[in-house]
Image 1 (cartoon, rainbow, N blue to C red):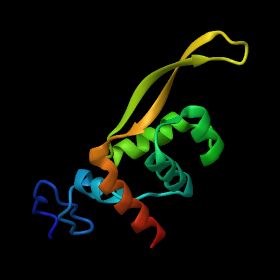
Image 2: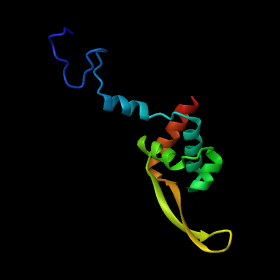
Image 3: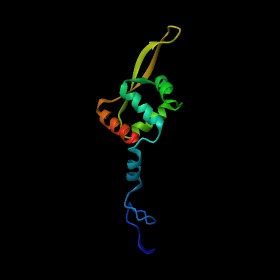
Image 4: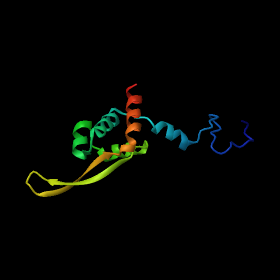
Length: 116
C-alpha cells in the first residue's frame, strides 16, 4: 500500500491485516491463558463453588477477576446467593459461582484445547 492510499476501515496498513482489533481479541479470548483459568473452569464443571473454594483450589487471590475473564470467553457463569452460618453460628449470606448448563460444552472445549 502506498503512502497516498488510505487503509480501508478495519485494516492495519503496517501489517496488511484484514482483521479488526475487536475480531483479533475475540480469537485470542476464546482460549484459556493460564493454569489458574484451567483449574477454575475444571472446578466450576463439578458444581457451584464459592469464592473461598475457588481461592483454595485455584491458588489465586483475584477470584472475581478470574471469573470475569472466563465470562469474557463467552461462558455464562451465574452468581447465586446462598444462606449459611459462620463459625460462630450466626446467619450469613454468601455467593457461589455456577457454570450455566448451556456453557458446559464450550467449557469442555476450552479445557480440551488448553490441555492439548
